[in-house]
Length: 254
Image (cartoon, rainbow, N blue to C red; front, top):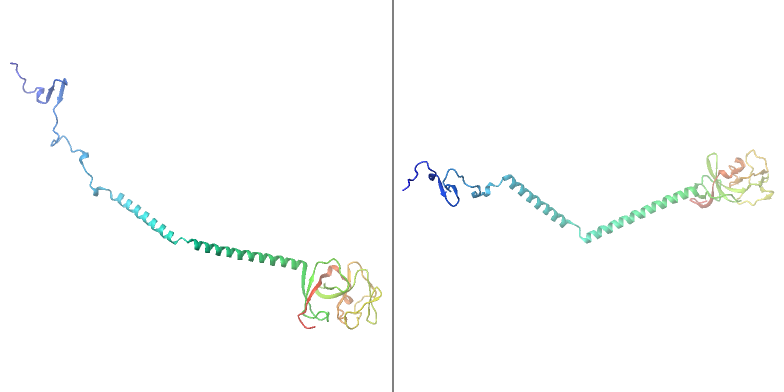
């Protein structure tokens, strides 16, 4: 018989595999060996091992979402109904209509004021030189739109910075004379007096007859005893006439 190897031969640590044709290391122990540690796959994660910060963040996000939903629900409940919207719309339309009416009224008043101050004038009569036609305190409404004046027109004219009311008795081209009997003659013709009493010459330095030039008018007071008119001031130019009377409001008994 052949001798069997002993001691340091390979058979102690290796098994001969004739089919593989090479040495195969002996199988290592599967458990209980200090050379093999426990597999991580076999470990289970406990719920308490979840990081606390991640848990708190998730909880905070959920709470914020719930708060937003509650706020949205509250606002939704407070949203106006269709009837409330229509009511507000009607109120808005009313306010806009009132504002539009007020704006139109203001524009009308402004236009009226502009037209009145440009085309018309209001004069308060001072004194009684125009009695019985007008007395102290009466209001005279005049127009500033005129090209010329006619005999017997009542006008407001300016002299020395003061306004006064008078009656036109002669026009440009006429010749005016007041005789010693107190009669008024225009172009040699006796003029019928619209007032009582006689027409005195006054204290003016004018020599009669007076020939009126272009744009000149002879204006007298209806109370012919009051000579503060053309008898003392001289002929009145058209550029001194501030308005022609169109209406007289008597505020006092005359």
